[in-house]
Length: 363
Image (cartoon, rainbow, N blue to C red):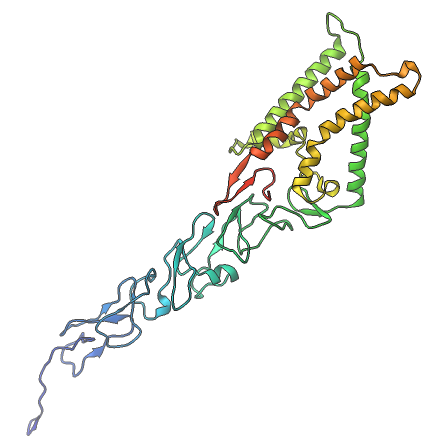
């Protein structure tokens, strides 16, 4: 009221949704967005807790984030601040979020969304986008179904990305007309095809040579040449055993891994030698070709035995020595045949529940 001395003011407690820090104030301040006050006569507003937000001023209570979502901290002021927690991803819609655990191979920061995983864009500029970790792969139409594969083949990042020009699931095949050299896909040049034809011709000549190398009479003691051949065969057998150990899904020491990687060719591990240029892009077809290489070698020796009958008698092959050559071939190829027999049973599990062969991840 007014009188001869001026206006007279009465002190009242601030209402809910307001606060006043200083004394002698003529009005209470509305709580800003991100804060609230549910008590009268307060000198300050309360911050909205984690999992809550408030977009309006002067509110008594904060609003709760949609089920399954939370906020990165206190005092959130918009609904957009609500998102799935770290290590989960939103597979729902903006109006109906649905948080799902990311699982192995997927890196999900706070507020990760399925759309952000597909595009690589975060929901906000100061946030990180979800991504696939190196050593894993998924397709664009099923980005959450992850496959496990070597890092050089699967660099991670966005769904559908493969390293070295690879394609297929999980980054296991080169395009037509190209082959894998251990690091990337390379074009199948005419020189590569010619080189493999020379290798094949050399193998056809080497098999008859085994007949003549084993064409000797038995003696009580081995001479120097025979001793050297025995030592060589033992070294090859040892290298093949090391190559077989290197194929197992065991984390061997680095030195041993380097030793075994160089001896993989002794068990017909030819995937890094552009064998797809002549064997075809299908890993199943290449495996079948490799398996039938040994029966074909035996059949070639039998054919040579038969063809020798067309020449003068002194060139005729004898059954005993032919069988001896076959036995020597099987002895040398034992490690190779063991490796081929084990490959269909050497599998590993993917995070999506599927399985692949260690040697051929696409199978």
